[in-house]
Structure formats: structure tokens, C-alpha cells
Image (cartoon, rainbow, N blue to C red; front, side):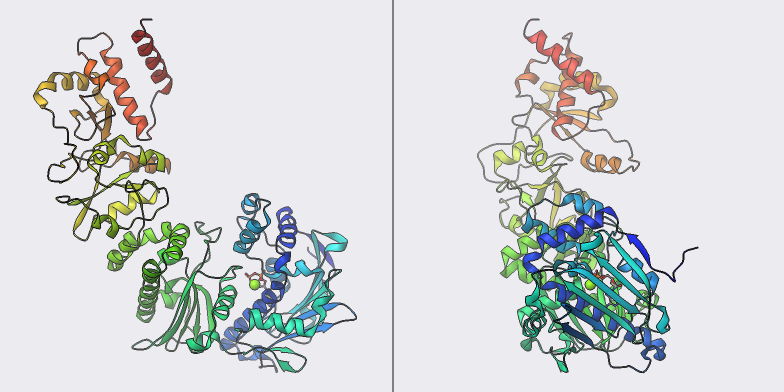
Length: 620
Ligand code: ADP
Ligand code: MG
């Protein structure tokens, strides 16, 4: 049995120690943020108390006025931040404060580079929170009592880096007042922080938006009203940014935001932010997302996922409803038509915000696309009602400039379409290089027809839900029969071979390749390479089949069509009666497979055969 009535010393996990060290070093130039983080936690604790008290008013005890106090003790060289919020039980202290080793910590630590500026940003993405105290303090003491528990059930947590880095102690404590008190014993040389003016300045800078009074001496230092309720004109950019850091638990300022008071059937205020960087766990299942939900200023829940569709899960912020009941639960949110209306409203505002960036702040939009484009793409499949709008926001690489940076919109593409061109052409491949150098593009390049280069895995799903844009069908360059005869411009004529002339060769190749191909035909797309593989019009493309296989899905067997280029020297020398004809046929097939990023069934045999053919040509 665990004895909880005595002092216990517990160790941090190894990664936590490492992370603390890194945090202290890389964030030192920003050390003031410790106060912002402690105040942010105190404000969250007050929100939680107010919410729990809705169901149990006794939790207020005899102390209903929620506030945060900051006190300096010059003689002891300490700063103390205290709140009368929800407080923590012993288990909660161990769970929340005892360790930062959330899922992904090890991977995260491994991703740090040693470059201070870069690592500071990464650590910021991970969330610095309570541990930022250690930037300025070497000993931190936290005494807390959860609302509703008796004074003797309070706990005292302490971590003394100077004495024993990597461990903390926990023991019972007496605390009459509900809530949490954090005392920082400042490191040597940090005495400037013991100056009251300095602390007031820091509070103004970072925590003015906090809705609770922050009191120093007898005076309230901040505005103490919910930021989102204030008129837009009275809120500065800095205040918007600092409020974002509080709600998003982010270290960096946001990229953009939209703040609106919505009236009508549902009345609510929305303050929605697009972060500057994707959190490190955006693609994890456990990734926390969603908005903070308030009802008439009372905090209801974090991560209210129902308020935005999954493809906007990177958005952070607050919705404050005038109409939802205070006892609204996650279950109710899932079924409520009122919530559907709020979600539709938030979705519309975020899309408008992105449209505005795309139109008026292209550089910002490029940054957004870089960070979150892959998430937004999911919306094309998920949100049929906004498909066209989302499609306009997509950005791709294309043969227009062959740049890997995705900057071409479908509207750009359509604007550059050739006379007579009625399709939007794309190629999908596993990597950008494979897409760019795909033999399927040869005739398109010759004729100057632009092709989108798709190499995100998600693109396969994207093109399966986005079949057209502005009435133009999207078409893969590696699928079906190709007919560019109506497209004007470019001197190059599409090769058009008299098929009869090659009938015997095609038959012989098909015979030699047997089950490996569905058909062999003369290509209208190749001008340089000897061969390529094509999917039949209604069959699954090879790239998608490879992706599905890689994630362990069953894929219906499909056979490609081999296309050959009769103009190519190798093809020209093929003679069906030749003793090495079958080897040449295999080589054409395998090269085509390799060129599109496919895998050979028997690579060693391919190598042997290639060597034999080379030797035979060399007269060996
Ligand atoms: P975050 O705020 O992003 O969750 P922190 O490191 O700042 O991360 O805090 C970790 C957790 O510790 C909080 O989520 C909360 O559960 C708990 N906590 C911190 N400070 C307080 C406080 N003053 N009152 C109650 N709980 C707190
Ligand atoms: Mg925090």
C-alpha cells in the first residue's frame, strides 16, 4: 500500500529531465513568460471551478470572488502566484504536474536540433506551461487544495533543481483556502524580478486579457474582463495574440484570427485563430483539438470538437453562446441542432478568413498552406457542402514552374488552360521527383499543357472526391486513352501511330508478358521514354494501390496496360523472332514500373537480365 501521509520523493522520467534542461536554456531570452503561464493556469483553474460549481454551488465555500494574487517577498527572494480556483487533489498533482511525459515526448526530444532559436519554437509547440517556472527559479513549491476537499487533504509539491534535479517530493499539507499557490524561489541573478513595477509590466504585456482580476498589493493590475466580449476596436493586436497563447497553450503568436458577434437564431461570439505552426502531434490520434466553449461567459469545456469539422482541427479559440443551456454536455453537443448551426457558422468564418488571406496576404497564405494544407485537403472529401470553396483554397505543384512549393491554385490552372483543353490534368506519385520526371508527362510538356504534380498520399483521396472544378473534369495522365487532338497550341503533334503497322509487335509483347499486363498498345503520350504503364479508365491507379498496400489494405488485383513508344531506339530494334525478345519485353515493362515508383517483384532477376542484355549488345 502506498503511504500518502508521508513525504515521498518521485523521479521524473528521463525525457522530462532533458526537456527541462533544454527549456531553461533555449527559452531564457524569453524568461518573462513564466508569469504568463502561471497566470494562464490560474485562470483555467477559476474557469473549471465556476463550471463545477454550476452543479454544486457549495464548492465556492465562503469565497465566491475568483481572483489571482501575485506577491513578492524580497527577503526570501520569492514570487508567489495564488488562485482560489479548482485546486488539485494528490492524484491530480501527480498526473498533471508530476510529469510532462505526454505521449510523444521521446520523439519530440529526439527531434530537437541543438539550434536555440529553432528549439525554442519546437518547445513552444510542445507547450511549456508550468515548467517554464524553472527558467527563473531553481526551487518551485506548489501547495494546493481541491475545492470540496478538507483543509488537511491539501498537498505540497516541491522540486528543487539545485538539490536534486530530476526528482520532486510530494507530501500532505494544511491549506485552509481553496485553490493553488505556486512559489518560485528565484535563481541567483534574477533579483530584478523582485521589482513590483517590472512584474506589473509583464502582466500588462502578457496577461491583460485574463478575465479574472490579477491583484498585486490591493490593486487590480489588468482589465479583468473577458477579451472576446470587448468591442474589436478596443483590442490591440498584441492582446489578441496573447489571448491566443492562453487559449491555445501555444508559445507563438497566431497567423490570423476572426472575431465576430453572431446574431440570429443562435447568438454567440466566436474568436477563432489559425496558429502559425502545426502542433507536433497534429496527426496523432490523441491530438487535442476543438474550441473552448463558454455559455454566457461561463467556461463549459475545452476541446469542444463538435464546434468545427475535423478538417479544421488546427483552429483554436473560443465560442461563447448565449443560447445553449449551462448544463450542456459532450453528448448533448453531438446531437444538438443548435450546435450544428454554430459549427456551420464557425466553418464559414474560417473559410472566409482563409479566402481573405489567399487573396490579400499571399505570403501568409503560403505559410498556412505549408503547415495545414494537408489537413484542409480532407475537407474536400468530408464537407460536400463547402467542396467548391475548399477546392479554391487548394494549392499544388505543377509543371508550370516545376517548383516543389505548392503554390498553384485550380483557378490559376484553369486560367492557363489551352484553347480546346477541357480537362485538368494531374499525375500522382510517391515523391515530388517521381511526379516531375514521370514519363507520362512527356507529350504534355512537349505541347505546353500544364499538369498538376501530386505527391502527398492524401492526394489520391483528394482526386477521388474532387472529380471536377468549374465544370472541368480532373483527369490523370496515367489513366485511360489520351486524346489531346482538340487542344490547340504547341508545334508538337501528338504521336499518332498507324496501329496496323505494329500489330504483330504488340501481340508478341503481350504474349511475352502474359499475366503481367492487361494489354500492350502504342503510346500517344511518350516522346522520349521507351515505355510506360497506364491504368484502365475505371481501374484503381497504381499509386493508390501501392499506398493502400503499404497501410495493409487488401487491393483488388488490377493489371496495367503497357504503352510503348515506337520511335524509341530500343523499341525499333525489337524483333518478335529474336532469341532475347522475351527479355527485352520484360525490360520495357520493368523499367516502366520503376519509373513510376513501383516495386519489382524480383529485383535480382531484373539486374541479371539487364546485365545479360548489356553484355549481349557489347558483343559479350
Ligand atoms: P497546460 O496548461 O497546457 O495543460 P501546464 O503545464 O501549464 O499545461 O499545466 C499542466 C496541468 O496542471 C494543467 O492542465 C492543470 O490540470 C494543472 N494545473 C496547473 N496549474 C494549476 C492551477 N493553478 N490550478 C489547478 N490546476 C493546475
Ligand atoms: Mg498552462
